[in-house]
Figure (cartoon, rainbow over the protein chains, first blue to last red):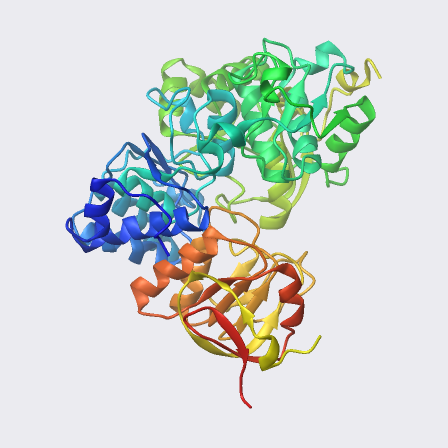
Length: 426
Length: 144
């Protein structure tokens, strides 16, 4: 089945078993994928984001154990995705049965044994030393795939579990899909230029826009026209996560903002788009409203940090609280990585947020079923991705709003939204 | 169209193996991560029209999988527990399902063919048919 894939001498040596049966199996897995993807050959990958560390059953452990038993190590830098249970704060998931807890921790240890960098984050692009423009990498978690491809200009397909590890062990990926120039051109334009410029500059707009684009783009690569050049990495994270959740978007371009889209024509590969969607205020309001399922009433929880909170978001959150306490009847979670939590701690923001009553959790995400206690009832989030997934994973009703709305609601104990930003320019 | 030896279906082999048994066909795509319980082989996606159906030891026919990075793990875990399908026949090429079955077959010495056929061909393979899959990827009626 692999006869169509052209191999280098090293590929052939590994595939023939000269470097041991475990590395041979890893190569066979990569070659199986290459054959199905109709790749003519493999290319070197410089980085892998490991999703297989996210426990979903004993098969995950048996797979990793096989490579550990054969003494293998990753060939390229391998950074770990989130895990279902925080490794440093396991007590926040009191409901998980013991086997799940134990095997989830064992699995994390196995990936450390294989030489992975234990960052446990879905936002590896926020960490120093992450891949740069033009690098071929192995991405797995959907928001990170979209962010690396779109905001960074690194190149990856969305690789599933086991293949991520095998590609990282041999350091090779099939040359197909988004690794190739031809597959990276935009095909459909979303024109946001008629939306109020003030709204366009906000992060909450980008969450809603990502949700809208994901739902309308189909299998096409979207190009967004009309985002301000000042659009922040946090806003690009919002589009990546929301678009990947609602529509499987693995790459988008934003003209004048993302690195492969200096202008709209370049983003489209100098071809006409299949379709242009003029985004109206009404479409945005509809997309925004579809993210809220909650009935009116007191809030039980606020969940921020999907994908993991960045340092700049911590700075904004501390400023928005301005040392006010959260309402005593609700729990406020912020999910982030260990690395960003350390930096936010050094800046003094964790201390002031904890003084307000905020819980900062690391290594995991609050929509895993359930990663935290009290994840039920009426929950507010600033994340379109959290709003999209949580009602299916947890016993919750969701209210979607901006980061600032979430803070005001947490202080008040009930949903408070600044509607004025949505009403202009319609 | 009825299914007979005269119109046996040649699938594209995504993971080699052989199996025989009863077809269970899903009419909508399935997510093997979140929409499917690998401990029981049951479709648990509340939005799926066949929620509650159990695919254990059946020839599972479906149009496509919903692409989640966890798909291969869901497939492999259900093969490990013995509650997974005995073969998977998909109406589109699918790396994730192929790799899930390939890894399970290596770890657990199972034999789980994964074949790609056309969407039109999935319509012929209706629930309850008894079929036989050979290592070449040929799908034929069984039990005559």
